[in-house]
Image 1 (cartoon, rainbow, N blue to C red):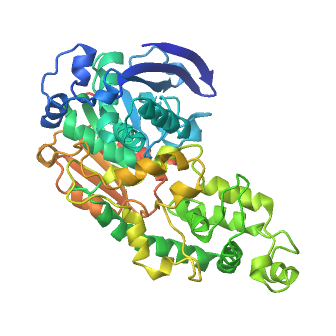
Image 2 (cartoon, rainbow, N blue to C red; image 1 turned 30 degrees about the vertical axis):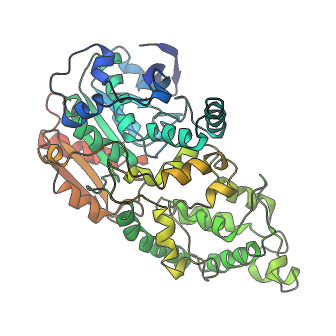
Image 3 (cartoon, helix red, strand yellow; image 1 turned 90 degrees about the horizontal axis):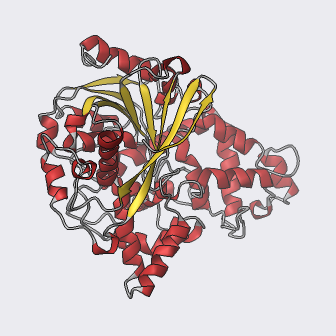
Length: 490
């Protein structure tokens, strides 16, 4: 393994590594690149290896960064491996400060060496950002190619079909081909089913938390289920903290004046304000929003009445506290992870689409008057992307032209093989959160009913981020162990 550094954190022994992987996996396979025989290649793996790579990206390599952590007392012991399939899309591995800083890790290091990869394009894995998009466009112009098309085709290489090949190559080349356990959080569950469709031989057991995709995949179906829950989550927040309904309405009325700017210079429109609901499916998001709004107004005692009195009764003249504006910017900008919004709807693109995606969330929002910018109380969006974001958010502007093309594309990499999943022999234990805002529990259970050797633990005790506490991984690990699914692993 190419070792970059080795060090200790409180309660953790850490190694940092990186390897090179192809930008375009078409035309080869992880086994071929690792120089090992593939004893039972799946249909999807064989199909991809038989495709011609894009000439624009032929021979290009990118870096894949990963960490290996264990407890200090287990250094040097031959423990089984568990690889974390991070949420996202465009998610980096957690940056730990101790075993308890991400709740599942504390239990995991009791049994495993934990592999934490940064998915391609994020973290320390050849990051994709606005500067990279601009460089691609400039190169395309020099070569007489369409800059937006080059960018769009590049971005397609950062979806699940490429990510699972990166991880399979990592397993084969850096861990001697040892079978490992996978743990998928949110989008990591999508990666899990893609991996079980394509490289099941490398997986000893699989766990997912809030992340079983509906198969067959459809962005329109997902948003038809999740937008009503966005309404319910927003109304639940207002019911718990009634003053917040009035505060948010007053802030929205101020933003509607059209002359409000965030500290980075981007406009604070009402629709930008609605993005503050992105975390409403997590705990304790309502309390975070409550605290943020508590200091929204600059004048008086912070109440809506006092703020309006200082503005002469005109909502368009209400003064907002700069610290509040900074909080809104932090909640809604994309500087730290531009691929999250860029790839958001394309995680539902599986192979040849019957219809292009065409801004699925925006179309759903437009069909529901409750989400109008003029509606009061103001309803918030939870994990939904919109075309205007790529014109107003500075971190996303360099992606705008490529997004216009991608939204009209109908050809993507194949992700799920329903026949392979039905015949699946890898033990799969899923935590399904009954009230999950982002990944509908009913759709998850429908998929699991058609995946061999799968089991669901359904709970309403946790929100979408339940894995990051101390209970969820311990529960699903115990359920799998007590069924005998981890025989030969633990």
